[in-house]
Each structure stands twice: as structure tokens, then as C-alpha cells.
Image (tube, rainbow, N blue to C red; front, side):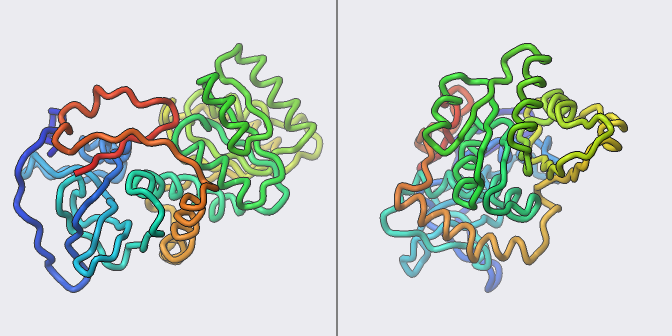
Length: 319
């Protein structure tokens, strides 16, 4: 449970009951706890709709578990999912490969949504293109590096703050890593050099804020022809606003868009469940899409914010 103004705590709740034919009761085996879940519970995410008449709610928007007929699935919840039982939408579920563990299956989908939707539908990635992932040392960023290569990227550049995590990205498919923990002018100069030698086609950004301003400065033209860059904002870890120079827009062949709830079409979301997520689960089951998880029992939910989660890993709750 997550009461307003407080942290999560363990509590007994009423057993969920399906309200119509589109709902099913899932016996939950794992549910990932993401920044998105915490933001919605606290009312800080843009999609939040706080209900002041009901100050406490079950956390979680999706889960892995077993249907009444025994089928093991990942599914979106109708209400909270960090519980022993949860209501799910029968139109938004994916059957899981038998050899994929529960924690990986629960952790992976949000990252596929945050990476795959941006790469496929907002950036329109094409085989052989150069892709820059800004903020690649986070969980979703690490998945983005791997999916970019799977989708055919010819060259992947990854930026981030954690030195060890940056080096680990080289084994996950990154061709070049670049630390944001350096002098701004040096960072911009390195980006400009990379853009000159291997023009960036797609830029997936999980940081925004001042980091995005530096990226845009590196892309700014000087009056001659420029290479078109599809810049997709996915996350705002370093701030929700940027100072955008009009000169950057006028001097650069720049296509700026965002990828998130509200930006996708119904057809794209249908494709996510029909093809993208099943493909990602199969890749993970075959060891070709790697993620790290840290698990915690549901009974310990009150201390989840105190658990040290390594850079690039995802916290998964096990009822």
C-alpha cells in the first residue's frame, strides 16, 4: 500500500474480483517496482490522477503471474499489482516462455516499452544507422543499447555517469562509451567529433535537463548542410525543462519528439503486445537480452526505498 505523504507498507486488502469479461484475476509471482510506479502513487508523474477520497492504494501497474487456467503471463493491471492477487486486463497480456524466470519477466517489459517504442516508432530506426543512447547506464538504457543492436543499428554510442556501468555496456553491444562526468566543453567536443566521423541518426535521451542542452549544442550547425537527427526524449532524470536555442533549431536538421504515455497510437500499443514484448521475452529466455534484478519479498515492501540497487538493475517484488 502507498498512502499519500508516506512510504509503502505491508497490509491486508480485499481479494480482487473481476468486474467484467475483460478482467481476470492473476495469481502474482513477481512485480517490478519502477520510478513510474512511485511517481504515479505519489501523484508526481504526469499521468497521475490522485484520488483524495481514497488516500491509500496498491502500488504497481503490471505483473507476472498465473491465470486461473494455469497459463503463465505478463499483464497490465487494472489497479495495483504488488499483491498476492491482482486484477489484469485480458487484452493486455503476453504468454511467457517456459524457461524465463519470473524476476526477469517482470523487470523487462517497462524497459522494452521505454526503449523499443522510442527506437521503433518515434525514431524509426533503420539498419546500419548510428544511435546515441543518453543515460545508457540505467536499467532501460542498458536494454536500449541491446535493442538498438538487435534492430540493426550499425554503431551505438552510450553516455552515462557510472564508470563501471559504462564499461559493461561495451559487452552489451555499445561500440563507444562517453562519460558525462567531465568538463562540459570536453563532453561537447567529443560529441561533435563523433558526430563528424559517424553522423548520429537517432538520439534516445533518458536524462533531459542540462544534459540534453549539451547534446543539442553539440548538434548545432554553422550554416552549412547538416545530417538529420531524430532526437527522442524518453526520461527526465536530470530535469523536466531545457533551454532550447532557436539557432539550434534553425541551423540543424533536427526532428524532436517524445516517447511515453499519450504519444503512442492504438496500433503501436497493439504491436507492442502482439510482437515486441513476445520477441523480447524470447530473446531474454535465449540469453540474448540481458538484465539484472534485485528481488525483495512483498512482506518487506516498507523498506524498498532503503534497498541498495546496483546501477542498471531493477527491483522486483516477489509475493
